[in-house]
Image (cartoon, rainbow, N blue to C red):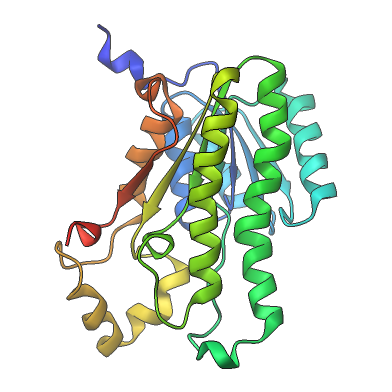
Amino acid sequence: MDLKGLFSLDGKTALVTGAARGLGREISLGLAQYGASLVLADAVYPQETAKLVEQSGMRCLAVQTDISVESQVKDLTKMAVAECRQVDILVNNAGVSQLSHTATEELPVDEWDRIVAINLRGTFLCCKHLGKLMISYGGGSIVNIASTAGITGVPRAPAYCVSKSGIILLTKSLALEWARHNIRVNSIAPHYLETDLTRGLRDSEKIHEAIVKQIPLRRFGKASEVVGAALYLSSSASSYTTGTVIPVDGGYLAQ
């Protein structure tokens, strides 16, 4: 058995949302390193990530897209097909966190709507339109980025927790529905990572210490440490894996 070949993405095209920075950028570069061409989508034009992918020698299409708007997801899908003919891998990474950990009874409805629209509605829309495309040519792999907060919950973060929990059950539902089309749907549940979304938490020594005490490995994860799970789920190495959630959490959920 060619174990190295199991992880090869040669000839494949991957579409990654939230690709402009952080985890989305790391996943994009990781998939490119293993041979995938990339379609990069983000609410801001992912120019820097596109440059890095092209420097690695891989083909790349960058598109500014608000994934919470269905017409824009439709346009993204059309552009991806026009440029790359098909999309074999979809990584739904785009997401936002709550602006402040306010008490739930004070949480503005607009804030709830914003988080659910991007995290959950956006993931659904990308699955809907790219999944339909995958059905038409007989298969693919979808990787949804969830969170440990969608499994255990976090006080004063109901919108974020609900959106990530919804992603996990969307993953399981689609895995059952689309298995007959040879489409595998899985998710990854990171814990706290060193990204822009957690900068405020890490800047507070008190909050940072409190979080790290709850993590067996005693540190925040790096975005690059999620790439291995994304590569596994995107490649033929996981050809018999669907409907699952892989924690990348420093041991947090093992307690």
